[in-house]
Amino acid sequence: MSGHSKWANIKHKKEKTDAQKAKIFTKIGKEITVAVKMGGGDPNSNSKLRDLISKAKSNNVPNDNIERCIKKAMGAQDVNYEEIVYEGYGPAGVAVIVETTTDNRNRTAGEVRHYFDKFGGNMGQTGCVSYMFESKGLIIIEDEDEEIDEDALMETALEAGAEDFAGEDNVYEITTEVDDVYAIKEALEAAGYKITSAEQTKLPNTYVELTSEDDIKHMNLLLEHLDDNDDVINVYHNWENEQ
Image (cartoon, rainbow, N blue to C red; front, side, top):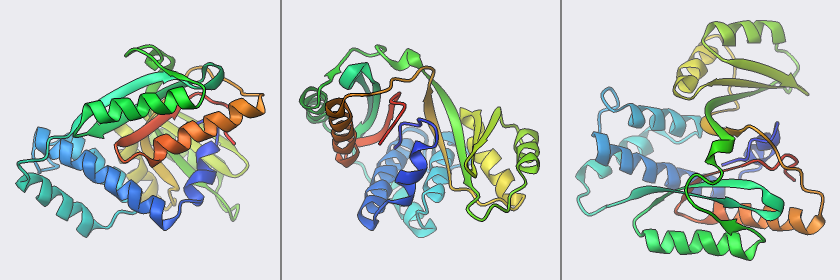
């Protein structure tokens, strides 16, 4: 759940605590429940479920947990989650998209609106900021030991179908079409590369830089409260210098 300003998500992924990992598992579980309800429990015929299984594995969710979640969703008749997307602006006009999965849209809408209002932003209408983002796949590979041949990695990624490749400070960012990310991840793993993260995401076309200490403080608080909300699945923004 990162903003995807360049390389900003790496630090956050490294610092995830066990409690945060448990929360991620719970949120992916809700997404799987929705996918099973909509398209059944067979990933071979339910592409959304197939992608979520890959997402769960990318976040180190154990296979047993994934299987239990699918079985539970197939047998649960009284779970009625729905996916709702909220859009708005953070401090100084930072564009924010909030993807949620909820069983009570009034509760979720009220909480998300409260966060925007409390931390110097405002929630807008559907479509008010989504046009500033593109849906893409994003694969991150870290080379802490400086053992990766950048040209070889780029060639492998592009041959596997990647759209773009960039490297900086021994971190490599591979951009793909949104539906190709997990297949390309598997191709890179088969070639011997260790993947730091792989996800379907929304990348901003333009970025906003915050210079006011108050704006930076409030933007961090907005993101923290959204991340901590059990109904919020993903948050995307165009804050360039995330701190």
